[in-house]
Image 1 (cartoon, rainbow, N blue to C red):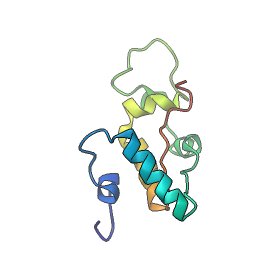
Image 2: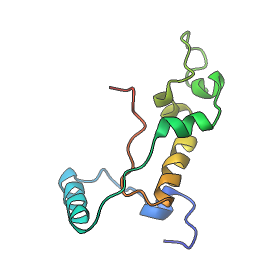
Image 3: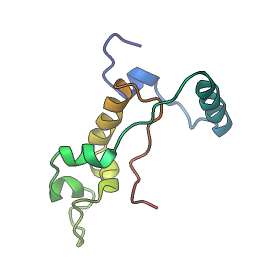
Image 4: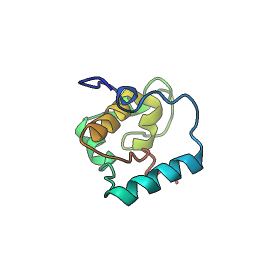
Length: 107
């Protein structure tokens, strides 16, 4: 890991393949036995702080969509992926052990 990591890959290494669920569970269980794990914070609050307007939410992918998109935070994974990655990165730098997905309203 570099002195001043500048991306999630710098912090955690690149993801070469989808990790095996049992390996992830084992790693989380082992870590939880040793210490309290820290979950990241509110994505919506951080997204609102970016001040995105309708065009940011639409991006190029949904520029022609007839429906209003501002406030559809989940859509930003597709239209503003660097912004979402930066929010996750900031939580990781702050010490979060677990980063949740930006899928609050995708259920």
